[in-house]
Length: 369
View 1: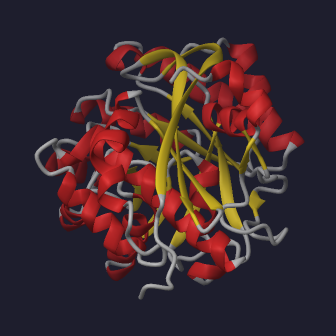
View 2: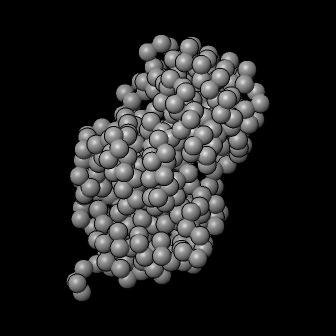
View 3: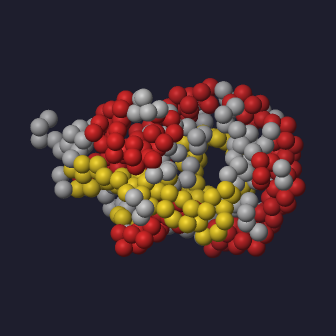
C-alpha cells in the first residue's frame, strides 16, 4: 500500500465566460457561464476535472472535499467519492456540493488514467468507438436568422443529424412563438435530421400534451422536460399521453434520484449530467440503473467531461453538444474533440486521461477566482 501513489493536493480555479449573445430557455435567462476547474496532483502528474457551477462550488472543494481526498490512493476513486459524499453530508449534498464532488471525481479519474498512460475510455473499457452527438442551443432569445444559422451550422456544415432548440418561452406564456420557432427549425434542417425540443419544465401538464400534438406534426421525436422533473408522477402522465420520447434527469445530484425517476416510469431516456451527479463514478452507476430497466442514457451538456464515460456504456443514446459549453471548452482547453459527421471519438489520439490540457494564456482573462 505504501508504494501506491496518493493524492497530494487539490486546487481550484474559477472562470466566467460571457455568452456570445443574450440567452434564455423556458424558465431562466443568463449572459455568462461559470466553470469551476479542479486540479488534483500526485506523483508529478495533474488530473483535471470541472463543473458548470457558481464560485461556491470551489469553496466547497477547498473547505470540505480537499481534506477528504488528500492522502487517499489515487487508484481508489470510488473510495474518494464516498469520502467526499460523507464530508458534504451536513452541507447538503444535492446541488452545489454535488457539483463540487463531481468536479473532483472527474479530476481523480483523469489523474488515474494519466498515471497509467491511458485514455480514460481505455481505462474504463469501451462499449463503442464513436459517441453520437446532437447540436443543442436554439435559445428562446434568438431571432429567426440566428436560429437558422446555428441549426444549419450543425446540420449542413458539421453533418450532425440531430439538433435541439429551447421552447416554453417565458414559462410557457408564448406558446404560439414556440410553435413558430419549431416550424422554422424543421425548415432549417430539412426532413431527414432529427429535431428535439427542451421546455425546461415550463409547461403545465395539459399544455405540454396540447403542444406535443403540434410538435408531432413537425416530426419532433424528443420532448425534454415538458413539465418540471420535480413532479415525477406528472412527468410520467405526460409521457403516457404524447407520441415522442419524454426525457429528463439533468437535475439529478444523487443516485437515488435516478432510481426514483426510472421507477416512476417518467422518461424514455435518462439524462444524467456527469458534472452534477457525482462525476464519472456515479454517472456510470446511473447508466447501469437505466440499462437494468431497458432505458437509454444521454450525457447532458459538458461534452468533453462526458465523452470517455459515454463511450464505455452499452445503453448510450447520445451526448449533448451544447453551444455554451462547447464554446467554453474550446476556449479554455486544448485537446477538444471534433463532432464532424455527428459523432466524437474519445481517446483516438492516444492522449491520456480526458485528453484535455488547460490553455492558460487563453483562459487567464476569464479567471475570477
